[in-house]
Amino acid sequence: MPYRQPGNWLITGASSGFGQAIATAVLERGGRALLGARRTHLLDPLVERHPDRAVAQPLDVTVPEQVDAAVAAAVDRFGGIDVLVNNAGSGQLGAVEETADAELRRLFEVHVFAPAALVRAVLPVMRRQGGGAIVQMSSSFGRYSAPGLSAYSATKFALEGLSQALAAEVAPFGIDVLVVEPGAFRTGILDGAFHHSAAMPEYDGVVGPVREMLGGLNGTQPGDPAKAAAAIVTALGSEAPPLRL
Ligand code: NDP
Image: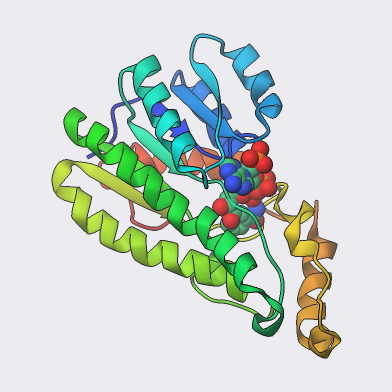
């Protein structure tokens, strides 16, 4: 069942990249959006352009109180949530042997536990409304992996499994789940942790080329996030949205 359009959206990681592009597409189509991010100042331009329909919300998705507050704020401001976009994420590069538990846990917090918490908080609202849609930003690395990408891939594989089960669980309530698996898109993701140098020189030979490939790609990735955002919004609005995009 397509969500009620143009709809009330809750978008995590709306300060950059895909989140910002999806927020822009939604607002340009007349939707209302609660924009979550830690760097809320980066949300200001969108809120200034659409002051009646865009709300900036301080949201670190790994903080449960902030997740609950964001869902409550969206319901309070818009009366409901038609689409949740679990988009917040970050990169990590390192061989399994050089990736500390803390780093693996951090990534699972952002890419798995946080989306699960947001889903838990939003589902009662969507069930009450009689429908909605949930977008899970996975990755092509949620389908296969490469040297140095074990932690990133492990979290995205986990998100894929969670989402496949979720889709079957919530379909009877008229709620669609769309799992997005982008390749290489021009966002801020390569500015950060994908640039970490390998800690163990033993892995330079296998992780080094991936690091160099990602570093060399930064800013020249072939994908345009605005086109992906348009495809996501269009796919969600169709009678039978795909499970994967
Ligand atoms: P960006 O770095 O441009 O954006 C990441 C966003 O996530 C930022 O808005 C950042 O906001 C937010 N974020 C990160 N950590 C947290 C947190 N703890 N709490 C709340 N927000 C957080 O990267 P992308 O747009 O590329 O990434 C978006 C999603 O797309 C990610 O899930 C990523 O894995 C996925 N993806 C990206 C690909 C690409 O080629 N770009 C390919 C495949 C998947 P702030 O720092 O302000 O909180």
